[in-house]
Length: 546
Image (cartoon, rainbow, N blue to C red; front, side, top):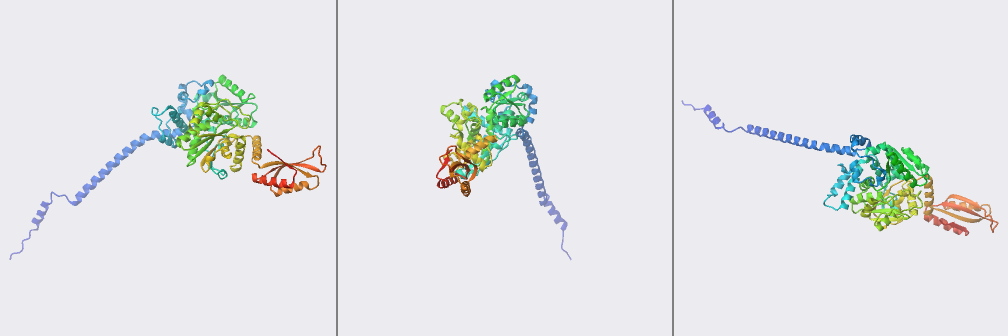
């Protein structure tokens, strides 16, 4: 019996022979995975090497920028000590007018050649590149000025205070969004610290070692006294004998050697120049040099950063005009639509006269130097910048400045001097009606005034504001008449400052006496109401007009 023939081995061998040239599915997947892993590893290695190369190139730049931004004279003097013998000899005092020019900086600290990376400079470089061959010389010099201000802002940032620019309660009263740049909060109470510090830090090492000398009794001398002492620079301040004792004391407390000489500031300046020549001191005065103005212009950078959607900026003008000139240049560069206004006293309209005549006016006199001490020349640089970038210059009266001082004391709780209240006086006097409803920054640039003078100014300001009035009233010489007058004043909520009963030597009526009173009221309307009531009750009253 024949059974089925079954050959399993042959069939298996046939299948094996047909699959010897085709790889299995798992082998194909394994090869693809290995290739993918190798490709990823190569990409990762290449990217890592490229990133390391770029990091190595950018690290020195970041280190240089960080070193420049934290530069202060204590470290700067050590860095420059190895190059001191390569510098030129100290500048002769008679060459002071040339100080700050490019040729002087090439022998000293090359401030505008430093490559400084900062937020402000980034904004400036984005808006203008200043190619030397593509634009005119005035525009190029303005661009150089902007670069100097940006460099100064980085260099002095740890030596001066970044003062606040805050919204003021005066805005509602004058119909304008007022933002006060409170430079009086600087250590010496003046915005001139910015220019002074940058000026001192830019001196050569031999000039710093020999010391500086200044002849002035204004805010400039106090700023020099403080920052020179902080930078370990010997400093001498020559003041006239009529300088208030408090200013002499303040400069000495700052660390300066104060010498009283001469009856006028002119005598003090001549004596200071003579001492500078004899002892090789560097003579400093407030001028319009490029270095000093670059430091002052840093305030404009802060204002533009602190107040968004800025419409206008009001700055003190007159003499000196460096604060107006330098800040107008930087503000117009950052936003050409910002309306820049300068304010000066009508008694010394130096800016208006200079712009009208087309050249700086140097002859100026002022009858009250104790009220407004900042009297210096109007230099060529300041004149050119003011003419190019300032939109309007207005004049105000001394009465307007006094009212501004009173408003700042009442609404902002700050005591300022005439220079600090000068910018606000333009709004108080109503000289800028076009700024109604605008966002306006006002510079409160100074706050140094002696207490006796401050008291006189406040008393006069209250009188000008119709809040202090004086009258003489004739009453019958009977018991209780004066008490009735006091009751009337108390009922009307008038504050009695002084009251005096006078007995005339020759009088026609033996039964009357004259009472003189000085009272304080809330405001102008309160004064009018009190005057009407007293006039109705006492027909023989006499009001003393201011």
